[in-house]
Image 1 (tube, helix red, strand yellow):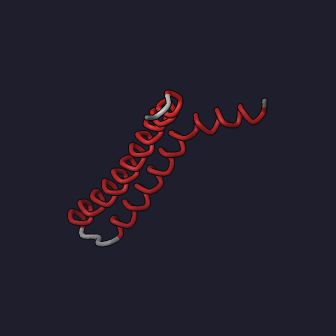
Image 2 (cartoon, one colour; image 1 turned 90 degrees about the vertical axis):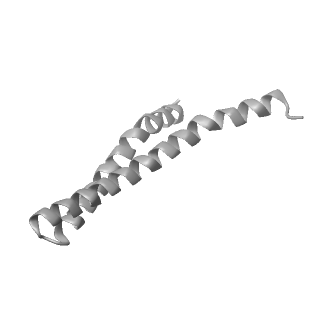
Length: 84
């Protein structure tokens, strides 16, 4: 039978796990939408594969910038703890 303290520790991991899952979905969606947009524009403008590559790069940049913005509060909170 788990002790009350152990249950509290395991419940504290859920928000972190859900946040990481959300970030993974965010990255995946950004990349897929970038590639899909590039494929669609390539089909319309007959410029294969230039816009797919541009879409992929744009999706990666947006994904990593978004993850950075999501992690920024956690980074700042941890830096505040180190300075005290």
